[in-house]
Image 1 (cartoon, rainbow, N blue to C red):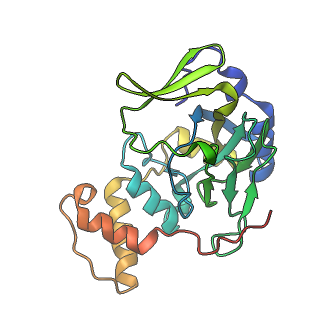
Image 2: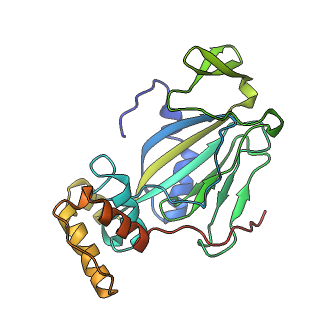
Length: 259
């Protein structure tokens, strides 16, 4: 967040194409790049999943302080839009394969998604990914099969030149070359619609307190007639976590894509 951890990252963090697209999307020139990171993947054995939104942020409540589950519930509930920090996300690909693309729902989760796949090398999609559902598409040559049985200790390591390998402990599970790696860059920027919104964030004007967050949830659940029990420790209460997830967190319902 905010402070470069890797030398030479500035051309990506300050990329004018990303910033200009974010400004156009949100109708403002107040774009503040905040996060950039890379993903390297190869033949990961995963289901595409039903689509998700990214972790949102709110004035006074964001992911460096509070668990992701409460932020996701806050974002999808739309009960905290007045305090939401607008975030633009760019995803760019540097991968020569024809798979490993991107499915996204720009028209909403109940409308057909779009697919960005094929010639994705050196392309990007810029979106409001905290609100727009999206998912990563599978990557890797199917004739080589998936690497099953990987653990949190499985490593992707660079051997030199174009050569990489996947290992568990001392066991080499697979070897691959650079062109088989799906490399993507994710970039996020805070976007302020006007100077007042920027000042409210920077000066912590009218920040949310976590107690106020739960009071707003309780009031909404009560208005919908949903039974609940107030918790003495709501952030650690598994029953409340499950209740808020059922009440507010959902996934796309239409999966037939428009290419």
